[in-house]
Amino acid sequence: MSYGKLKLLIIGHSKADVNQLSTDFSRNGKQLIYQHANSLPDVRAALDTSSWDAVIAEYSMAGFDALQVLDLLKTRHQTTPFILYTSITDEQVILSALRNGASDCVPKGHSTRLILAINRGFELMDLKRRKRQADSHIYRMTYYDELTGLPKHNLFCEKAAALLSNNAVIDGMIAAIYFIDINRLSRINSKYGYSINDQLIQQFASRLSIYSDNSCILARTEGGNFVFLKTSLANTSQAQIFANQLLKLATTPFIINDLEFYITLTIGICLYPRDGREIEVLLANAENASSFTRKIWPNTYRFYAREIGEASLQKVKIEQSLQKIINDKELVLHYQPVIDLMTGKIIGVEALVRWRHPELGLIPPDKFVPLAIESGSIVKIGKWVLHEACRQAKSWQDAGLEPAFIAVNLSAIELDQLQLINHVAEALHATGLDPSKLELEINESVLMQDIDGSTRILNELKKMGVKIVMDNFGTGYSSLNHLRRLPIDTIKIGQPLVQDIASKSDSSVIITAIIALARNLGMQIRAEGVQSQTQLDFLKQANCHHVQGFLFTPPLSAEHFLPLIEQRKTGTFS
Image (cartoon, rainbow, N blue to C red):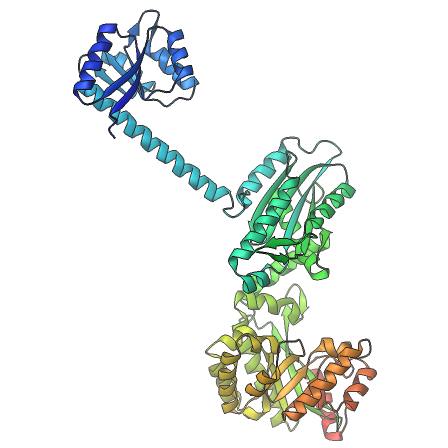
């Protein structure tokens, strides 16, 4: 780097030396601006009143030396290049100065070398400056959220641990970790795009920041999740008061591009030291409390409790065991009959998977299927269920106890797999089951995610001869046009609608309309979750074809299901 104008602080040199330097610098195209200092007070005054491109000093001066000047620069944290321009030739003296921070040492009278040394000093300073900028950028990327400027998880943990260990929680006081989740941000993102989503998060972070002070630490972990550490709380009541203050932040709409957005929050609260002393434990407990809160009601909070932790541990156990349940032969199918309302006979069965966990006992599907979907192991589980259901159905047929069909549920991931067609063909071929005896149940919401893709796959399955059931119909996804396009054999009314028959008049109206729609389209209609005689009577009157539910029997193992199949021969289900 070359500078045409140099501003130097020259220390310990005579007036004649300085004049000679000025002449030499001018000859080399450098304009010299300088200040002359010959004592430590003069040096301090010069450093106080101005900034310098470089400091040029003799080693030994009256009353002080170059090492004292170097120490002065260090105490002031100044990185100005310091170059010895000296008549001293003692190697040990020169090495001592360089070890103490001198940039270079140039023999007196070699002004051209001095200019080169100054330029090297500038280049070194520039490299150091760039390194500091890079280090600062890396630090911010590592420890601070780019969108909100708030600390990330790692910095939050460091600061929170330090705050809790530095007597921030004094005798009789407590601290609380708040895990804050903005509900349904994905809907805003999918409808309005990332820009609106990001602006909403930024505005909410700004609102949260009003409560941040020396007793608090706020961070954004990911997405719409924030964590807050609040210390100096006298009791649980104060922790509740602060939680309510946080909830109020969501009551005022967020204005973005002249649009109003309303959000709800779920907050999990974990108390220190009652619920843990390690910050990672406290965070995990607060997040677990938040996930349980979300299932109860939006825009509320919940304190961590031991049973939440136990449920979380159970979830971890299930996740860890999922990958090996096929090999360990822990899966089992239970069967629930499908009843014909005209004849009262069992005309089919639905196969429902259960998990005989060696530690946790018999686990129902709602406890492990969502986790299997998250992990991708649902494909392996689904393939096993398909084979086992077909094998059992063929076994009953060979024994002269054949139900008209067996129904198997498919998940969204299974429907999206190209090998689904092959899995179904393999199961039918391996067991010898007539394809017309197999029904595949697919949730309405799954079919509607990709109507064109669903139609292609279902048409391939129909070519094989299997029947297709749209499960959980009535959730508001389908339209008449979609129903006409999809090759559906049976519509299955979802349990929530059936449960509301007696209590909500609009549910009965919807069910009546669904039944009429299915009949007009030449489809069978089935209702699940029938638990009362009132529900059954209504469905009969509405001309529903088939029903199933606990009013008749819960799902049973194959062994216990045999007596029910025998009843089919005698006529009616009782």
